[in-house]
Amino acid sequence: MINTLSPAAPPPSREPAPQVTAKSGAALHRPWWMPWLWCAPVIAAAVVFGVFPFVNTVLLSFTNAKPLGGPSGFVGLGNYTRLLGDAAFWSATWHSVLYALVVVPLMVILPLLLAVLVEKKIPFIGFFRSAFYTPVLASIIVAGFSWQWLLRDDGLINGALLATGLAGEPVPFLSDATLVLFGAMAMTVWKGLGWYMILYLAALGNVPKELHEAASVDGASAFHRFRHVTVPGVRPTMLLVGTLTAIGSLRVFTEVFALGGATGGPGGQARTLPFYIRDVGLDPVTGNAGFGAAASVALFLLTVGFTLLGQKISRGEGS
Image 1 (cartoon, rainbow, N blue to C red):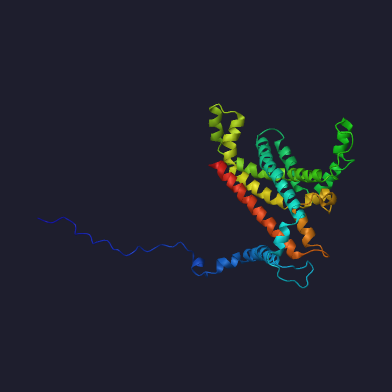
Image 2 (cartoon, rainbow, N blue to C red):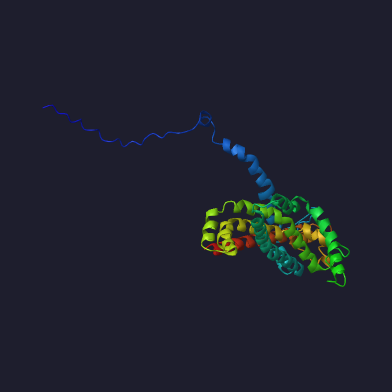
């Protein structure tokens, strides 16, 4: 009988299979440092304009350096001790914190509501989108002059209040420290609405329409669809907007300068932390660059604290 069984197969080889690479001919001859060469300009710019100024500011905060140069010495924590005992520093810090506490919630909520409105496909919606975005295109100086014209004693708002009898005398929008600060807040919100509206429009486009349809079929009202479908869908963008707005609010300078003048309101009573840093650190006669650097470090820590707080609140709402 002829044996028709095939011979036994050889045992499988334990040697690893050769790996097939998809490198092109150029990649085979490219040195390992070539990618770093393409990244070098960006890395150099980040170091020169970001890392070095930050490190230099921290080191400067331990000295008594002058803004125009000259002899300086190491003072240790003296600048920070003096900072904690300065009532003007705490006043400026409170104004910056108040600015952020008022502006951040408004800038998180109002642009979202505006984006929900202009997302709809109705006639002339393109015109309204452009109109809402127009303030973003205006320079901050032009916006400041416009708001000065609106808020001065003989301006449009006081004229309307006097004409309608809602006020018996002009409201001191530009001569009262509190009103100057809140006027600057209104200017910040007005100028940033259009920009953050665009961010929310992009986020709303990624929210599945099926969720809205399913909620509508289940009988959910427009408010409940907004709360339970729209808001969870754009929560990462809300965190981004809140973080960017908090950083900008704590660093606000131009809006207060435009409405309150170079002193930061009457008698400097509406000064924010950037105003305080300018006054104590950059004055060519009485300024102390080291002390101003310590105030800058305090502003940085305050900004980091607000950012971490916003992330914690966002995680708590998302859980």
